[in-house]
Structures are given as structure tokens and as C-alpha cells.
Length: 299
Ligand code: PAF
Image (cartoon, rainbow, N blue to C red):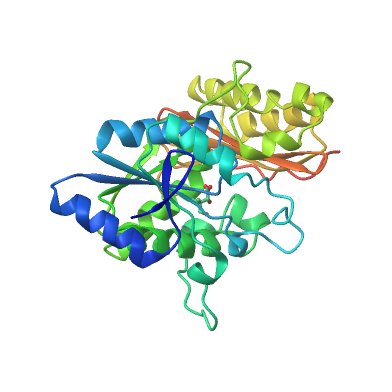
């Protein structure tokens, strides 16, 4: 019998998790997994809701994965509150929390990794070396540990979603991946656990990122050449008060390669407010000509 945190059942070991899932499968239930790093917000709970709609049983995992953080990133200060997360999951009708510890995920001598391939090279891959290999490896492990029928991921981390889809396809992992649209605050700011780091002044500036991406998408769809629309966007992000722009680029929505005419595209950006890095993306319909702009630091 799994232990409980509040009213939510929790397992911490792979074999316990597999036993529960095997039982559900024997009963004919469809099982969904929602992988998270905790610090749950409405975006995560929407993933749980989507999983709930598609499956009979929902597992959420919480594991703050050290291998996807760079040496100067926020692994140590990443918000952790398992009891609060468990209460939110119980309220969202999640059936089981899988919360392995570090030794369960990375036993001594752990060495094998999953390479994320070319999809991991552009966009955030250029600025966070090793990040996507860390994500691809931990997600592969979580999928193989849970043996769920489907797994839900947010479109907010769109590059991550595309990488996971490719890994699942290329490695024949028997799971269906579901992408779930980004959940936003009323002012358009994409929900993220890292929004908690923003000062009131930074929080005031933050929604400009999405406003600019939406405007870039409108301009590009209306015929403005992609590189021109992206240059306008880069200048607008800087003018809004962001301290640094890592990139603002229009790329192919599937391959993440530079956008060719007639292909579905997406506008992507990563920008800093002080010590907090925000990312966002916005779809754009197929356009006759499009491009990529290297957006350097703030002038
Ligand atoms: O998106 C996240 O929260 C993480 O990257 C994930 C998918 C749970 C892997 O650690």
C-alpha cells in the first residue's frame, strides 16, 4: 500500500510505482503521467486536468532534476514544497504522486545518457549547454519507470516538447505524448515556477514578452519578412525593460530549423529580468517568407 501525504498516495521507488501501474493496467485502466519538478501552479494543474480527461488514472511525478541545471543556474534555490504540491495534486484529482529521491533516479555509477540530437542545438540549447540532454535522459527514465500510456507536457517549454516527442519516436518508447497549450496570467505572462523570483517591478515588465511575440507573429503572418519582424521584436523586448535578450527567433514549428516558406512556424524568445530567465513562444500560420535573427544583448 503506498504511503499518503495528506490524502494523496505517494510512492518513491520505481518497483512500487510499477506495481501500482501494473495493477491499474490489469484492471483495464488507461494511465497518464504528468512529469514535473514541483512548485506546482495552474499550468501544471491544467496538465493534470488534461491527463484526467484522457486517462482513467493520473500519476504526477515531482523530481527536481539536477542534470538539467547548469553550474550557475538555480538548482539550489529552485522552489520545493512537497506537502503544498501534494495538496494541489489531490485537489486536482491526481491518483498518485511519484517522488523519487536522487539515489533512486541516479544510483551510484549512473552513466548512460540520452542525446537529444539536433533539436537540442538551437534556441535554449545554445544558451544552456547540456540542459536538453539532462531533460531527455530524465524524461526517458520517468517514461520507462511509469509505463504509462500517455504523458502530458506543456507547450510553454516548446523545444523540450519537440525533443521529447523525437526521443519517444526514435527510441520506440511505448507512450503517447500530449502537448498542452500554455496557461497564462490575465496579462499574458506564461505561468512558470520561476515567476516567483520576479520583483514587483520585474513582474510588471514580464508580460511584455508575450505581447511582443504575439505582435511578431501578427507582423510575420501579415507579410513582414521574418527577419524584419524578429528584429522589431528584439528591439521591442529590450525597450520594454528586459535586462538581456538571449534570442528572439522564428523557426519551423516541428524541426526547429530556420523557417522555410509554406511551413508552420513559431516565434521563440528567452529574455532576462535581473537574475530570472523567462521563455515563451507563439504559433504563427504558414507564411510566404521567414527568417531568423540573432538577437544579442541589450544595446
Ligand atoms: O518541464 C519540466 O518541469 C521538466 O523539464 C521535466 C519535463 C519534468 C523534466 O525534469
